[in-house]
Image 1 (cartoon, rainbow, N blue to C red):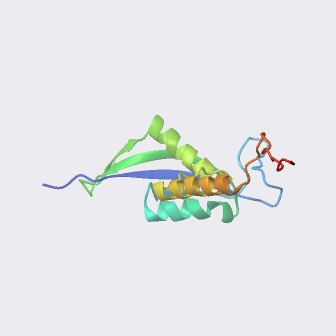
Image 2 (cartoon, helix red, strand yellow):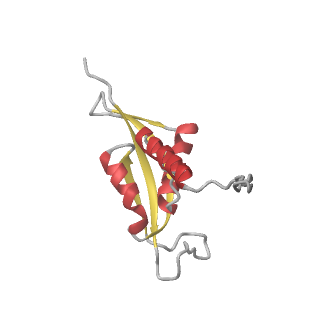
Length: 143
């Protein structure tokens, strides 16, 4: 009995600049004039991670997620594909957009959170306290 393995494959359409600025240009028939390529990557693989990490530096001016598909490789001669829709596709699209724009929110590890808390406490303790009450100074009484 063959084991069923499903791999989410993401189709990205990447657009390169044609020397006319950093926007996609169209002809009179609304066809894209920029050089564009379809890139297919397995989601959450090492290749996927490295591609998204470097996507801003590859010279692309626009990246679109054209679709995502689950491939059932139980039957290698005729694999079945199922299109991914809904929240999964939205999360993939957001992940690609954040990687391309560089606005990625980084989740801190528990150790990093603890270090940040301790640094804040050290800073709070090292600042001099401002006192509103003036200390009373008493002069010795004269006899």
